[in-house]
Length: 175
Image: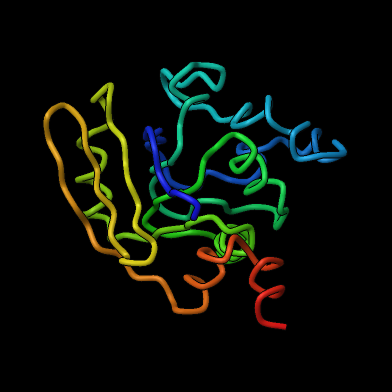
């Protein structure tokens, strides 16, 4: 079974759009693997470097509201997937981006602003990591000798998509 989570990458901004996740000029690439080096290439945040080891080793992204707004391209979840990022946690998501995450077998977890603020309390902790139990609808953040658990909601259908590995795998088992 797929594990969800890993080292946490904190992107402290709302409205991170799909052009910042994967610039449009790379949408002509043939395979998902070809997208890999361009993850978050156009994202502008103070102190953020898309080529830094912290970015390249991330397993989960934590951000603010309206994550994945902009174009409805599947390439945005794909570039996370090919870089080993299995989940994004935010206050809210653009509807199509969120569904594309589920359809690709990845977790898009919505939490209230107060819970997101608590997660950002770990942003400066070098060893911050998040383990996600999709089945149990619970995540645990650890780092700096601290640990906290948070429950989250996900619809039964979206949970089934994620646990199956995405829409294609889900359909293979059901139809």
